[in-house]
Amino acid sequence: MDPHQLSVGFDRPAQNWLPGHRGVDLYGTTGTQVYAAGNGIIAFAGLVAGKGVVVVKHGVLRTTYEPVIASVSLGAQVRAGELLGTLQPGNSHCASETTVTCLHWGLIRGNTYLNPLVLVQKPVRLFPQFKNN
Image (tube, rainbow, N blue to C red; front, side, top):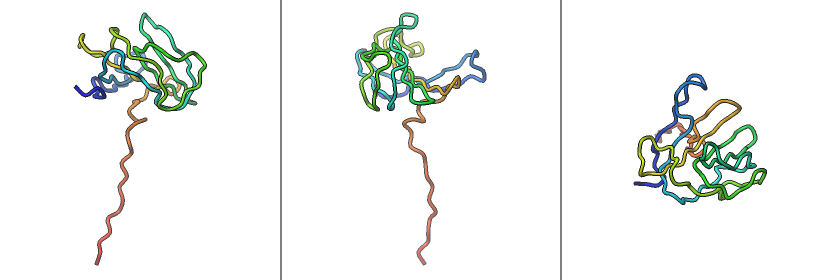
């Protein structure tokens, strides 16, 4: 299994209180290092319902990472690719796969959940094709 393979995709609910999947789940293994998606400031690093969570504020955007045992502290500045912590055993977001650990990665603007894959996907650009006559 590819450690960067998508387990569960993004499924934004029509309303924030409705069921959906507010991020993506990426296959991993316990102890895998988790890195910041971009430059920012640590807005939260701690436990939520027994699950390690790290939140990085990037201007108007926030990225979330769970379950992660944080190696960063609240208020610390981080750069893209900087270590945030390690993937925690158990408490995984992987659908019903009890033997696999996944990183749940989220992206939020205000109160709107966005697909975090937009941060890593390259846009497709179409260029005109010229005929040589």
